[in-house]
Length: 416
Image (tube, rainbow, N blue to C red; front, side, top):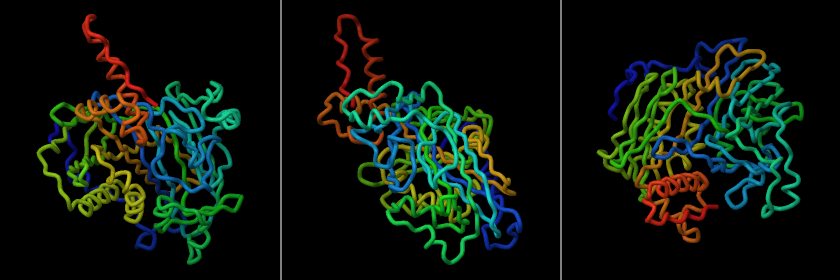
């Protein structure tokens, strides 16, 4: 990777968790530690603009997870939610909040989402946002126009929130039996593999973490652009350093190449030269180790880093394409997702990972050709199909505007 401004590797390596893992020497007695991890998922066109249409989820959730009406697990039909949603440029995926303590206590947890809605959660919340109901949609059916009163357009701005009131207590030998309820998915079970405490709400629902997901529209502090040469550039437009960046590309033969950068300073820029690297067939353990190290260096305990990578492994690393994973600066995470916990923890670590799918000019040309034939379009069932359609629409409109009057404009491809 070639860069104009990079933080020294030693600075990145020196970052360590705010407190030792439970059971290790030096654990705080009497207070508690709070850790959180999650993902900001987005799709970037080659011009660096985030694309709307990333509202669909990839990793299934158990049926017992709570949600706003029309956004329940599995409530997706024909690449859209039952609830009409528009303007989603960032999907907030699987933040989980862990507590570490040596004694029980009562806690109130408040999370706000500046720029989005907290759409799914567990255990049941005690308060939070209340978008309009969608009963008319559910009764009329998916093929009929949805009332505008039910529409959530995140391009217009939205500020969500959620509140939990829970009892926090150290996990004993019976912890796994207390959280088991049946119907859990793999992506739900992996985050349990930590030494975290149990959390129980007033309804008696117990888990090893507080869980939520969301959809929104906001501009992250990094901008990625892609050139015809295959080079991808990144600019840090924020006021804080990006602690780590992992660029990853998987081809259609399940071979991969990648590059890890130790940090990008405020105002800094860099470019990824993966084109000079050969694709490797035996890459999984190396990528796993580097991804875990990036998360641990950002502050997570090792078991938390393992849980995050294993939860998202199929989506992160088994899907063909070029994507960049970057550690969201703590200042950015706190501004987008303000977190207030009473009583306050003695130590707090929040590690959000930005996952940005990068569309190259070459891939965009493939998309334009593919979307021209709606029936044979191989991307029509893809999770990012709505975002791909938005990019195709922008490209075809741009092409039509630059054509001479004597040349017919191309017919916009059919989109779903």
